[in-house]
Image 1 (cartoon, one colour):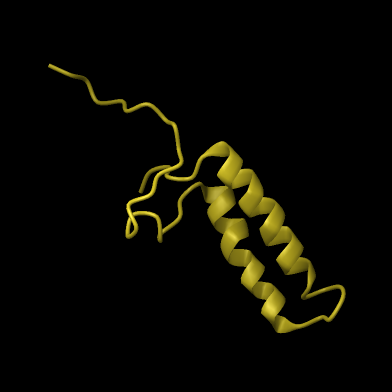
Image 2 (cartoon, rainbow, N blue to C red):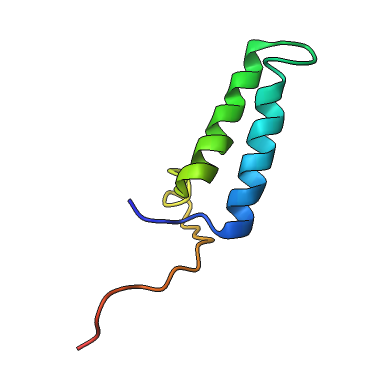
Length: 68
């Protein structure tokens, strides 16, 4: 499991996750707000399990493999 979420993507996921999660504590106080944990956690960890399935990678980390 490597990084597949880039810096901008991570930042947006964290902001959106916190905004959605706030709905569980403020505003309508609905349990649906806990769905904000998904983008929040994928933003913090830097890995989205859906990205490999749809062949997306927004992370710009250089490969550490040595070429022969």
